[in-house]
Length: 324
Ligand code: PEP
Ligand code: MG
Figure 1: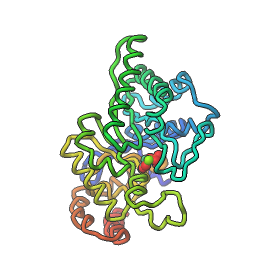
Figure 2: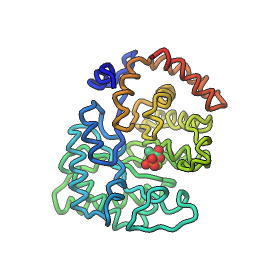
Figure 3: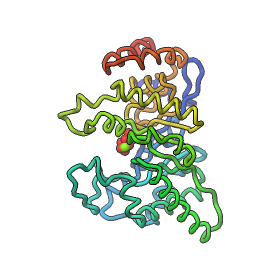
């Protein structure tokens, strides 16, 4: 990494025309969060709690989870740390929770598992809430939401865990709760979600997979997995617009947010909260410094009119080339 890039990593993420963008990190290991704490990230946009679960040989208990979450929260005093509840199933198996299915990506995954196994969910929520009571900077994110009923049930269990902890330890405030927008159904539920949760985070990896019916991990169809597919871009634009109308804070935490072209596209669509791998933060902040967001937004109609992923990519290359 050049000195220039490292210099940009310090200080707030600002565009060439002086707009503030929040750049968060995606993490799953505490090592990731330790590295990024020194890179000027604005907090953790996505902490994948399934990663420590996958590395364990049995379900981690409440104490163990409490210590882990506390450590992560303590790295970002005063900054939001978004812990996502367990998102196993699909491509993320747990050795100690075998699942046999013909269609794992359409099966028992994410919130579906934890709502069916409330004991697992309640232990995790209690560990998270206790860490929040100590550090005060937690946000909880719910994965794979496809209905309002799932959100209501998750919130009910959260209030139950919170109530029990308040009885035992004294009152404290509930953290902000958010929902992953990654199952296409959730696009049509945003007004109802806005009445229930405090933020949403777009999972562009799964959103692309499910909108295009293309397995995100199958090399045979890798060519068809296109976050720049016009349908995905329309969906991303619609989510941003509707969240703005609803006053619902929105971020993007899929892989595209950390790649220069994807980052630029999301800025052009109006997103101002982006979450990426720790190793991509310095580069993104450096690029941002050279981009005029006002100019990028002028490209929006043209981007939305594009019917081809490659062509859309080319339209973004011009501002990127100008940025060097
Ligand atoms: C996503 O689906 O875009 C996402 C961020 O979650 P994961 O990659 O963990 O499924
Ligand atoms: Mg996902």
